[in-house]
Image 1 (cartoon, one colour):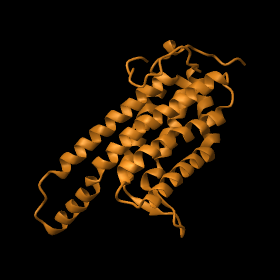
Image 2: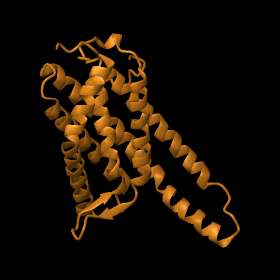
Image 3: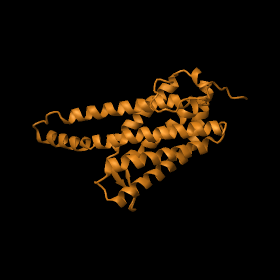
Image 4: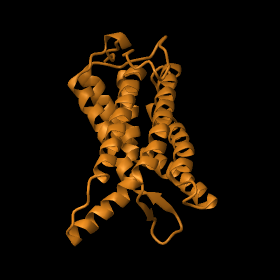
Length: 239
């Protein structure tokens, strides 16, 4: 059975696309909130951030969006995630500026909240810049490889695009978010560990990702190949 293919300009913003876009934004916001929480991997010396629990899902969704709907739709969703994260950052800072309650228990809870979200601006600043760069690299590699390979080898495209995106993300995020808070050796170790773990996450979940992509293509009757399009990351209105 020949797979139905449509050009990028014919793709509509379907209900499935909207759900995937919302899931992408939620994963990104949640991972940024969890990011300041470092945790130890068993009895090893390896440390990971709390965001590693959910952040790789945003890259998997990015792969799915780019593979099915094309680079331009993925670019739109990437900027949607950026704006939503920026909004949450502003709101969290507004809440930390509210007067503290006078009761002891509530006062302690307010202090704990402010301590956690006091880290958010620095983490979010690094995360937003890293996210835009990493996600754009991920979508670009996925899009270009699909065209060059004529749609073959989805698994390799997903892994290599995520590896490229995660590397760009880590090189930008960790020096901004944790520079001066962790020794250089610990910072480099954290960066390497994050890239490896997130890429392994992608590999382990790859069979599920491949099935989901195949089903979405069949359901939507869409399989976009990016032709002569602009890869300018700021052309958001071009969808």
